[in-house]
Image (cartoon, rainbow, N blue to C red; front, side, top):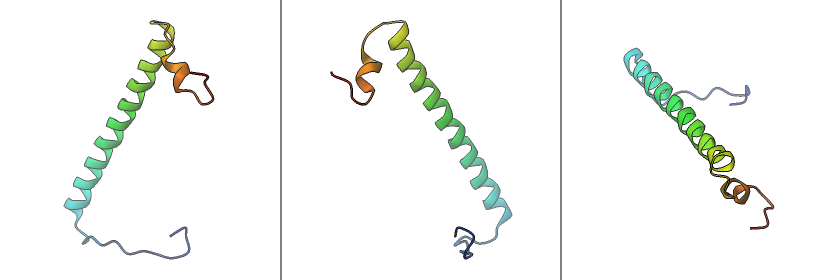
Length: 64
């Protein structure tokens, strides 16, 4: 914990389980990056292609 103490893992030291958890973690991390990219692209598409005020309304301190 922040380099001050070691917190033991509640899971058994099982290499197969650790590998499965790592794989799931990587897949979910990549899915989150893809989702964030699609979300940002959609916001920019609304701003530049559709030229509506969707992106402006999401910004803080917007007047709408």
